[in-house]
Length: 113
Length: 112
Image 1: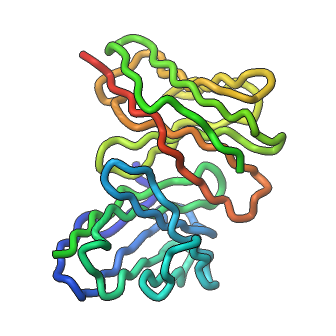
Image 2 (image 1 turned 180 degrees about the vertical axis):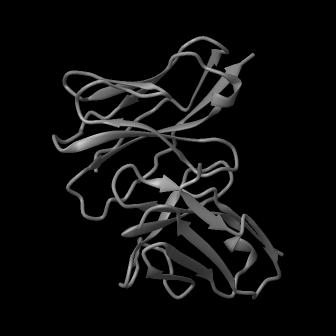
């Protein structure tokens, strides 16, 4: 069964709305969680690495004020897309690790109208 | 982390073995080879990983050449549900970031 749960699976909202995506590790405590974004017909692009209790580390070119990440517990990390616009429409995927291997959620498809 | 090179697409007949190659000629001694796959509109699924010995689990086998510069993922009896994009990733186990960086992968089509 799934070891990483992501919610919601799909979001459709108006431009300017902020959207929060949750990522939970099931049956294990994730010391590190990762957030990826995937555009159609492209590979996954790592956005940020999130460690419990500390600030997230963002990859080059990813706006930290646009994509707020909170990792308040060992089983939950959230990604908030602030003031979302149509260009933020994408497939967002989280991943969690404790020991190997790293497991992925089933993704959140975000559509901004 | 070392880069990997995979063919963009492959196909095989259902029931036959699917052999997916991956080149990682700049791999370092402490870097593992990981394989994940992504079925359409889902998150990546872990398949297998190895350092230098061949590995086998219920999903697949991983064959790593002696010089570790390439590897092959083998799906022994491919089914239609194995149609997916397969990613070969190398990463050092001592890397505190534990990031998995995805390349473009191989799109495998299993034909009926």
